[in-house]
Amino acid sequence: MHTRACSILAMSLFSMLSGCAAHNPGPREGLPPRPRLGAPVDRIGRPLTANALIGPLAPDDVSDRRKEEYNHAPPSDWPRFTADIQLTLGLYDGLDRQCGNQWLANPQAAPAMRYQPLAKVLADDRLWVDSRSTVCTRFLAVELTALETPGAPGGDCGGRTPLQDANDVFRSLLTLGRTSGVDDGVSEDDHVHSTAEFPFLAAP
Image (cartoon, rainbow, N blue to C red; front, side):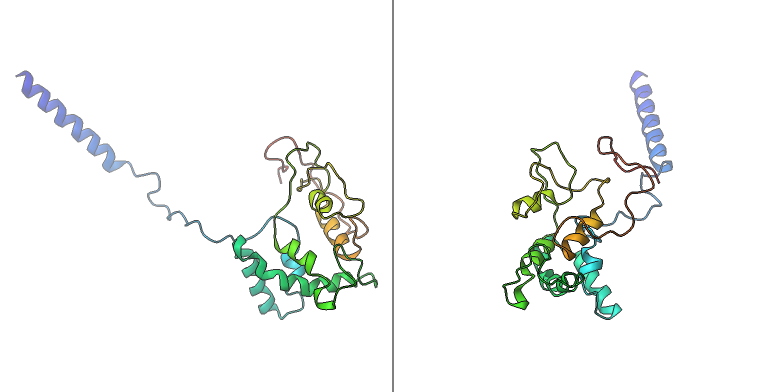
């Protein structure tokens, strides 16, 4: 009798578990499959590189396609875009009607090679950060220091915080060879961001 009761109890528990499994969908049932991790779709390192330096004078379809290739490229393919960037840097160098004063430009080099040093730096689309420093107030500080740029802010951790006007710094370096002087008219965001509290960006 005891054995029979145990068998009935075991069968009942099995039926209950089976029933629960049959009526409770899995965590992803009815949802589309997770996308496979693959090629990136955009970059968030240095600002404006794709829009400002990849094919700006090419026909729209050619320019857009090349920008997409740039955004999707894995790091091993980044050097492929050095020539694209190098070709465009001369446009910015001449905006102030003074050729050769762009950051890292070499006025003594042949025209085809004048902008290659900066093109190589920008094609390697990584923000340099000095983790030894706790002062982080200047965009591109580590690059400027490492490349022996006059007036470079030594001791700054570099990187890019939400409080920095990275676009103005970038355009100024391309046009004037210094970190200020070109202003897009937008000095700060509408919201106050943080450099100490995650997730750092203010609510929209």
